[in-house]
Length: 280
Image 1 (cartoon, one colour):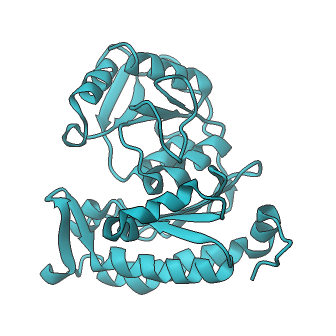
Image 2: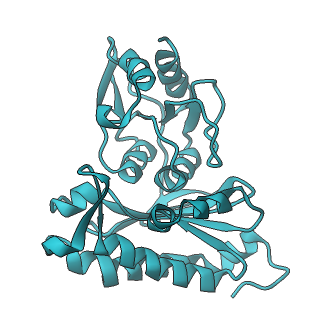
Image 3: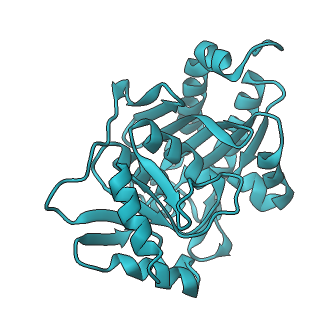
């Protein structure tokens, strides 16, 4: 457990491997045994037919809440399912205590349909700044990690996004129209132009990983839920990428962002996407 005088950096140096172990164990115990084996009673709707939750989501979040809170006494956990049950839980992101931001199954719709494109997302933030993140794709047994100022890694290998490919269309994963306001739809329409190849996104966490790996050029998302973005934004940053809102400021996990926003593999791509989103 963390000592009372220990800093977050010291905690991560001493216990980072234990956080990784907790993420892997949560997936092994609660997610993978249900993958492609979900019974009808294990799947529920939250706000509608495109917003699903499963027993895997709930139980993996419970596992991580207990494990992470034990590793870092005095911290709080903001998980997607806990916030759905009690929206006031989200307010902990505004507080002074270290906060674990957890999406137990990012890409629940894919998970329900037996698609391996889902992941578990964990980020550790302090004072509104993400300090470390873990992105685990259980179906592929791939773990991406990032610590602020120390780089991004996938299964131990350093990630470097690099610049966009000259002479190629920018590959941009975007919010699905079903989840956008009319104003956001107009902003996203700016991406339908020469030199850009937009497509609907899958799991947000895996889209961020694709940018950090240089497999995709950018994202353009229209919602603020911290559990979808915190881990991936740090991963992209530490791989050399940049994120910008429509006002040209970095995305803030505490909210109040001008949406949609972009996370891109390099600064030039971020500026280009931001310009297109702001043209409406």
